[in-house]
Amino acid sequence: QVQLVESGGGLVQAGGSLRLSCAASGCTFIDYTLGWLRQAPGKEREFVAAIGWGGNRKDYTDSVKGRFTISRDNANNTVYLQMNSLTLEETADYYCAARANDDLRKGVKDYDHWGQGTQVTVSS
Image (cartoon, rainbow, N blue to C red; front, top):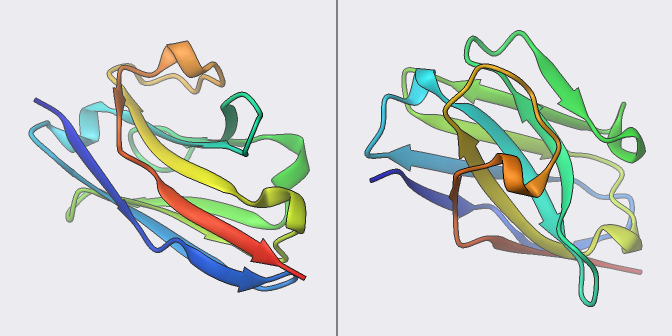
């Protein structure tokens, strides 16, 4: 059973930075594409970033390109999301997700396994 546990959320001022982490267990980590998705209050869950098996292929939603960086440490079964220059609109619950294919997907339904989420609140 794949388990994903996020950490690193919290309160940050607009323009600030946070680094989210997601620790995986119960799987062969390198066999999974990992993604970060978020859900703001009253909105649908949306794709943020994804990273392929080897860590070289990455994809981002347009609004975070140049500010967010996804990375993974296959030796420690962990995926990260470095978020810089955060905006008020990025207040959301951030979820780590995994899919057992080496292709980068943006759809919520493309991911088979999910963490419980970590809350990010951006204040003015």
